[in-house]
Length: 204
Image (cartoon, rainbow, N blue to C red):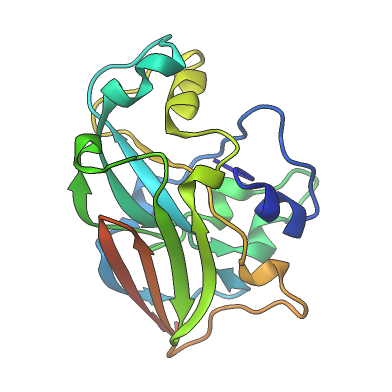
């Protein structure tokens, strides 16, 4: 999901979307919660996200039924190489976000009933101890049930399908000047009630 927090849309130079905006990350990008990520050429950015995992076949459901189709929530990093992502006459979002290791997730899957309010969780990330993103998932433009309903009216979602629900403000590309990940950096990401991801960035 792209631009699902108003402040992130603004830092990216876009108006907040009136409908959900989606792209894909290829399955070969997925890794576990504690990893080394080899940096490709270009500008690699962080995007901490709440991730929803689908529990059962989901087709043409209403938003009111969305949470009943979620197996659990976890933490994800939508690592993004910005040059490839924005190259060409049509942006290459899916490729720029699908290098090996660019979808770390975990450390556990937590069922929605374990949260006092699964629509309002603290989320953020830091690089080498400096907080880069800090927000609450209640600031999403489209909450998890609405994203699932919207997708299910276009495609069929299957058990195990993974939805990265969008990143809050604070990405490197939105800073002045822009800041990107470098070899030796330690990226820590978290979502309240779930846990943390730890990525060490290494040179290719």
